[in-house]
Length: 89
Image (cartoon, rainbow, N blue to C red; front, side):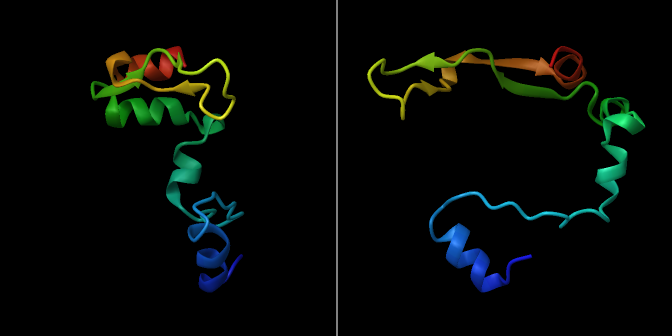
C-alpha cells in the first residue's frame, strides 16, 4: 500500500491509474456484488428500473492516429433500464 505522498507523487501528479490491491476487501459491496453470490440479482433489486445513459457505439475519429482512434460521442448515448443493462452485458 503506498503512502499518501507516494500516491500523489506516483499517480495523481501524473494523472495515471494506480492499483491499490486489497484496499476494499472488508467493504460489504465485495460480498454483495460478487457474481458468485448473486451480485447481479442484488443490484437489480436496488436499481432495477433506474435509467442509465449508455454508449451504443464508439466512433473512429482519425484513421491515422492510434492515440485518438476511438471516442464516445454524446449523440450515441442511449437510455437503458439498469436490469436490461445487466442482462445484456
